Length: 96
Image (cartoon, rainbow, N blue to C red; front, side, top):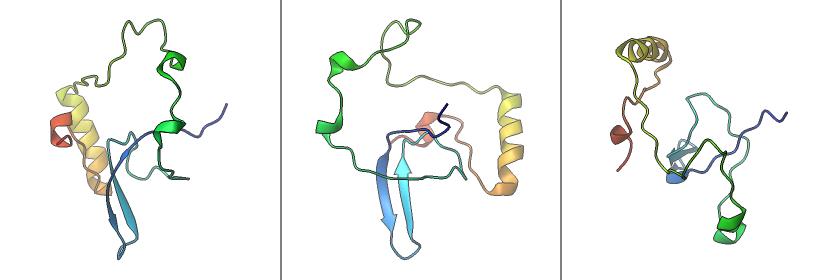
C-alpha cells in the first residue's frame, strides 16, 4: 500500500517574501506535508471513457455536501484552536 496521496488544487497565490504557496480546493489539513507540486496540462488527463467510478456511485458528482453536527464542530474547534487552524463549517466560507 502506498501511503502517499494525490490531489488536484487551484493555485491561489505565491508569496515570494515568505516563501509560501497558497491553494484553493485542496483536500489536506494544516500540517500535511506536500512532497511535490506539478502543473496539470489537459494532455495529462485520461480520456473520460477511461475514468471509472465505484458501483455505489450512481452518477459522478463534483460537490458533496458535508454536514457537521454541533458536537463534532465543537470538538474540531477545540482541537484546531491551539494550533491556529481554521475549520470551515461550510463550503460557502471557502468557495468564491
